[in-house]
Length: 148
Image (cartoon, rainbow, N blue to C red; front, side, top):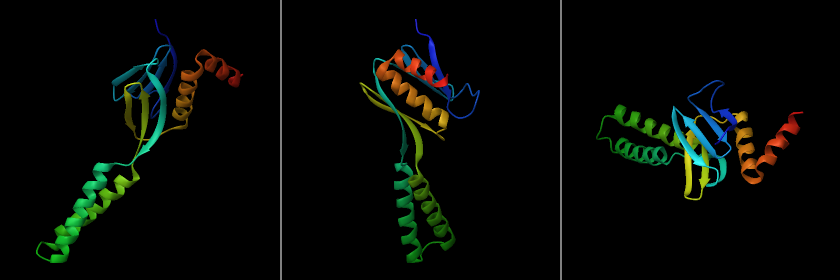
């Protein structure tokens, strides 16, 4: 039987729809009321990463180059092509900014769960989970000593 060791809200306090859970035998992420759970025996590490959004980078690059070409030929409505040019530039910018994510590395590969932002509480929770994966119950005792 597993019992809950720690939890952390992903976005805001008391947000039961978005949180991370660590129990004695599993790690779970609940995002928008959808739960993904992994057994701790299969989890190697959990990381906070920053990813570029390739769809927006590639799509924006294609739209920008085609609309620039259409604008330079002068055959099409210039307001439409200028609008498409700025939309494409914005898509490239948005893709370059990227997004935050939680990466769970398991024995079967890795899974990535995209999040809007990363709070200090979430950073500390992920650090605790990684320490718990390495040393087990000693991590809990170490955190209890730090609080005292």
